[in-house]
Image (cartoon, rainbow, N blue to C red; front, top):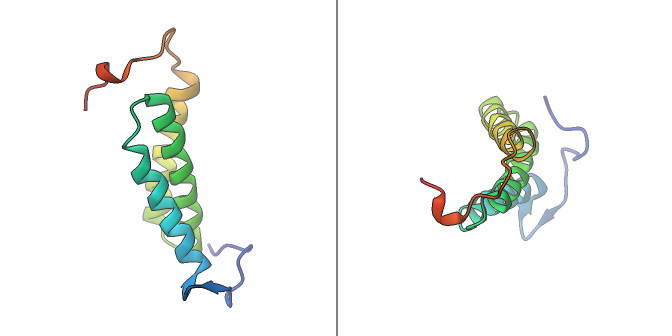
Length: 96
């Protein structure tokens, strides 16, 4: 399952391929999401990182990366849109 939107001889910036840049960007968004106090913002930023990881996984043909991040995006969407609470949960009520 190779991606069709980035050619094999893709451009490199600072000797890093476009595929690797997507991987680094994915990692950045997932990591930054853990510093968020607001659970809604955390889930949105984490979902963005996971979606980028799904793209990255498809570029490197890695089903474990694709499946894991698709499940995480599904969980985030479930809590953001389907299982809405009447009130937002304050950050100090969120238990690890």
